[in-house]
Length: 251
Image (cartoon, rainbow, N blue to C red; front, side):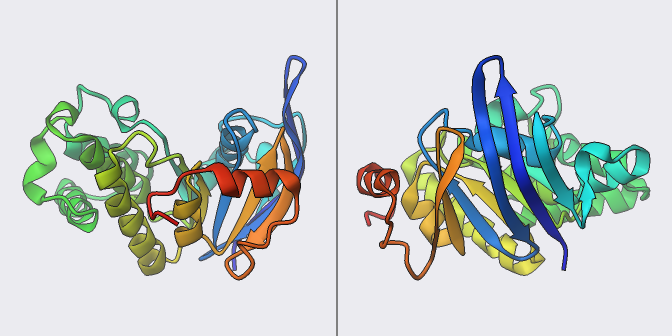
């Protein structure tokens, strides 16, 4: 079973330590939540795991290999295996590309398939995320926020990744749409057996989606909670966070 292992990862920007010796494992098929206030280092952690940011110290291992040392085809294989969905779907999509082109871009970069196979794959992906094959020629501005996020998700799963990193994927959406996107991601996780690292302010979201949750405060992980002891937080910051963050589920 594939796994991503973070070993004492730290990231420093100037005098600010965004990550402070963060360690945990994410296994294939497992869903982990990372929660905490804005600026605590959650998004930096996801960016390091995605290979978008190099850590100041520590290691991020994929199948036992340090991703900062991967080069050439080995790094491309990692990027294909680990995909990320960002917070704002509007800025994540190129307004000059239609939905089909947005989804096809990673396919063209990583997969050698014919034009007809690409077309069929794009249409299948659109249907898989709850859109229509007829949406293939529409541009991002013709879609709602929730539909744009579905396109981003389709693009992320186009390469059949083993792990999906979700950075506040519902925070910019209307409340009425958030539950639809979470249900979609939950279904995809099960059908594709992906490992998921979910960053969210919404405790209800991570509680529904994740097997366990890491609470992050000032760059450090201060507590680990699982689905069976979610309400039994011991760290003062965890208690404060669980008591104060609103949930779309009303819990």
